[in-house]
Amino acid sequence: MMRDSLSFSASELGLRSKGLRLSTVAALVWVAAVATGCGEQRLGEAELSFATRAITVDPGRALVTLPPGGPPMVSVTQRPYENAVTQTIALSTRGRAAGENAIHVAFLTAADAPDATGVEGPLFKEPSIEDFAIAREMEERLPGIAMSPSAVYVQNRYGPFGYAFGRSAAGEACLYAWQRIASGDSIFRPRSGVISVRIRVCEPGVSESALLRLAYGYSVNAQLRRSSWNPVGEAPPPPTGLGEAGAPIYPMPQASPGTFPEASERPATRARPVRAVRPRPARAEPADPIPDRPLEGYPTVPPPPAN
View 1 (cartoon, rainbow, N blue to C red):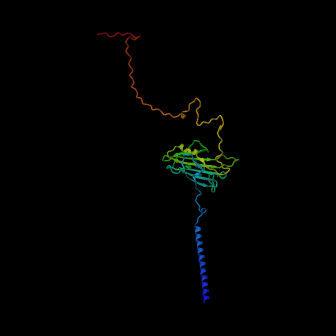
View 2: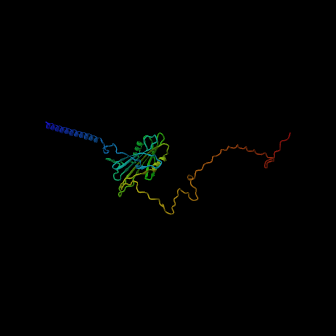
View 3: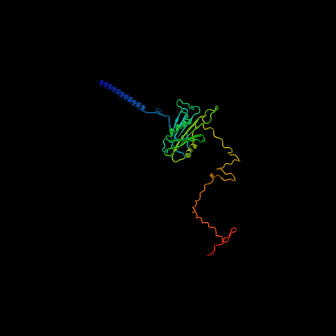
């Protein structure tokens, strides 16, 4: 009797231990399912896709920088292509004209620069500098502002460039400048690449020359690490006579010996105020005096008889 009770207790204990193992396995399966579900909810950076390839970079990595005193940079948006890198450098905008101040710059590679006929695939088409293309750009970036292209030849440190000037309805001065930087091609040298620059600036209370200084003084701030990429070309040689005897260099233009500087070079003098002078009344000229003796050459007329 005791043996049966002992055997029963052992079997009962076996069933209980088997039940504990099953519950443990079920709990582990549930935990694994929960962990798997949580793992599916975690996202990696590689899973996130955007509609555009443009990214925001630090202003210190801008491809082009303005001279001191120009409008400050607000942001730099960069987009890579298979044959180019482009940036839109947003500048501070104070005026009320439509659009924003910005610099549009593109670095195109030497071998993959596409022709003007068209581009296939993820390639960047080089901006044209023809009149029709520039007019279309100004209509897009300066809407409602009549821009007058300048017919004067201008050139900065990178070569010739073009510009147009106009004023908005509020009287703000607006400048649009364009430039294509590329050194010459030859059959013995591969194409050296291209830099395309567009400057759009509208500022209140400034002159045309003040805005034009931005196109003269901007600097290219980067380069592509390719042996054949050199659109700027080699640095020009120093001036003839630099460092040699017999070639003095003065801090300012000097006048020739024995001559005076031109009127434009003379120091400005303050004009003295002119005191108003009242005109004096004209004196009456005296009449001819009556002669007290007969005049020579004339007959003598006797006086009238006394009564």
